[in-house]
Amino acid sequence: MLNKYARAFFTRVLTPFAALLIRLGVSPDVVTLTGTAGVCAGALVFYPRGEFFWGTVVITLFVFSDLVDGNMARQLGRSSRWGAFLDSTLDRVADGAIFGGLALWYAGRGDDNVLCAVTIFCLASGQVVSYTKARGESIGLPVNVNGLVERAERLVISLVACGFSGLHAFGVPHIDILLPIALWIVAVGSAVTLVQRVVTVRREAAEAEAEERTVPQGGETR
Image (cartoon, rainbow, N blue to C red; front, side):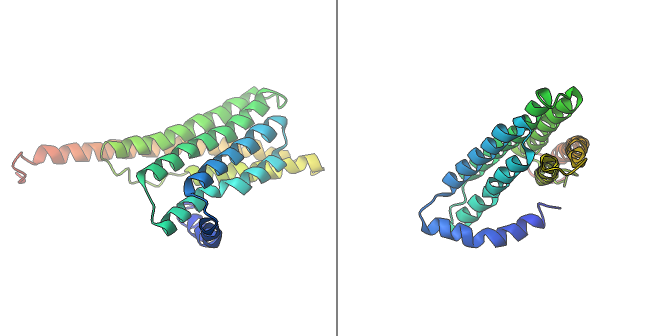
């Protein structure tokens, strides 16, 4: 849902900014690398110390680079396989930093092994969800499924919860409970999404193999 609607909205909003960067001579790859570095810094510097509000502010400032670089590439007419590969690869790095930073908090001063394990599951399941689609497409399948919790949903749920939970440090009582709730939602949603994609790939693979068996070498249907 977020990929369909929110991405389109923010793409329109960020188009003038992307055009400005182009006029300044900034390349899309530089934006991709800078955005990923900023997200990693915000997550790994602030989150392990429990500074969720400021960490989320920093991450949010950089996370929109994921939309800006693609917008710039389209304006320049430079959409390429390399750009898509770099963007997708660094998305995984950024996701790993966000959930890794939270896991470090719960393994350290947060002192909660259960939530540490849940956070690690969020990290791992998110990576596998992305892998299932990429792997399915690499063997020629469309993987035509909209999962319950995809990357956009994982980021929004986690970052919004982190930001509001960080208000606990400013005296807002009990709001820190939002982060554990969000992590459980992301964990369960990611597991459901993984099952959805595996089932879809299995069905599409069976359909493709059945079609291949019914088409003879000459190309005509029996």
